[in-house]
Length: 282
Image (cartoon, rainbow, N blue to C red):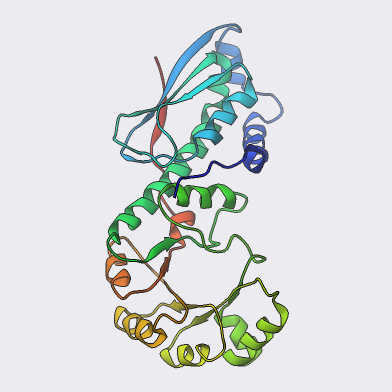
């Protein structure tokens, strides 16, 4: 599906916060002392390594919030695969503004492009299988909306956005409730008619119990490939199956080959390395 841009209102507070954090109480001492007012410059955002771009609108806003006269011209779109050395965008305007906003803009762009690139690598690894790669709630505090957007830019899909858009019964819920049936029954009684319910299972016996309760999805947590294959056969397409637990690009193909519907990966958002992008003067 086409990548839908995020409305600016969803990320503007994050960009403003990042700029204010950087500017502190005295502003950009270095640039203000060295660069004369009224000097204009043109610079290029250049990918130092190949990868998938995400966060161009966020980077553009960082420059524009410092000075509305800055012109940001993307060469590629979010979701684009670019080679090392590719010019991602050009930016021109007051030199002071470009230098002051540089770090905040690059922090967002490099991080989000790193998430998108990591996602794309796993998506490519499972190509040919039906399994979708999805992220989790293991996101950097405050950046969830952007990181989940970056996952979509990389060709992945999103799991829950928060605690309020679906029910996911985890092992600790089950432990406190006493058993899996009780936990599911209480969730069903408390959830609205449009709220889907997923339950985490660690064993095939738990899975068989879950299948009798009318849940919508099962999270097959830390199961071996052999167990996953057995679980998919037991489910027989009656509900959504999700595999989770220490998934990498190397292990994902075998997991996908079991026939699961979803493969959820936390490190895509909490530990993906950045994509190295720099701002070069022309």
